[in-house]
Image 1 (tube, protein in one colour):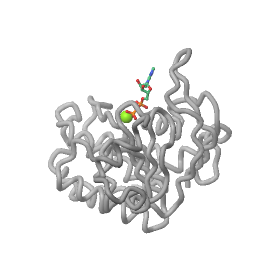
Image 2: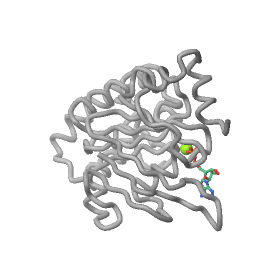
Image 3: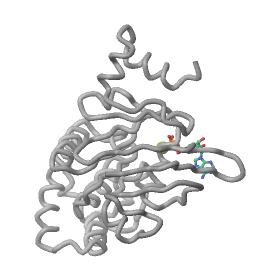
Length: 240
Ligand SMILES: Nc1ncnc2c1ncn2[C@@H]1O[C@H](COP(=O)(O)OP(=O)(O)O)[C@@H](O)[C@H]1O
Ligand SMILES: [Mg+2]
């Protein structure tokens, strides 16, 4: 479970990127965090995982406050960045081992998970290559494997499906469903409302730093029975 209370981020003097958000993302569900470019999704996710300091407000992860108890809070989640261009000089396997060590994953468990995940994402043959030689999609996949290798309770994924091939996207969605079904929290951002269909238990729509809708996609559709999903999205995120 993730709880945000009055969460606000102001960049510089007056760029309000996230504007007084109060919302709870419950355990046992996949939540789509949806909004157009520049809505404040990445800023919110980076505050949730402690990379960015909020200007105001509080964040708890499984009831642990990230500001008061950062180490314990950080053990609760794994974060897949929207920009996977990190640790380029490491080999894929070195990066996975590094993450497994940081999170003190039992070596046997690590090996078992790695065999399964690298097969799931068709990465077995490139684990010994440097991340610098990977395509964008492969970099994303190695970041996803690195998060799943330590099996955190909360998954935070920033635009995880953008740039993945259909097979990998399908696999990731299956893993997200499995993880949520086991009672965990999966929060992912997207700027594509269609991605949320079939996958999400609930959605939160953010626009200009403000939560415009929170609930199920079906409830949202029922409130605008005559409109297409695209029209609904445009309507909810317009000033009208
Ligand atoms: N480091 C930064 N400094 C100043 N403004 C920023 C910074 N990062 C993001 N912003 C601004 O904050 C707003 C929200 O950005 P972001 O959270 O990246 O949106 P999203 O992920 O939904 O596309 C945008 O207007 C963006 O230009
Ligand atoms: Mg973003």
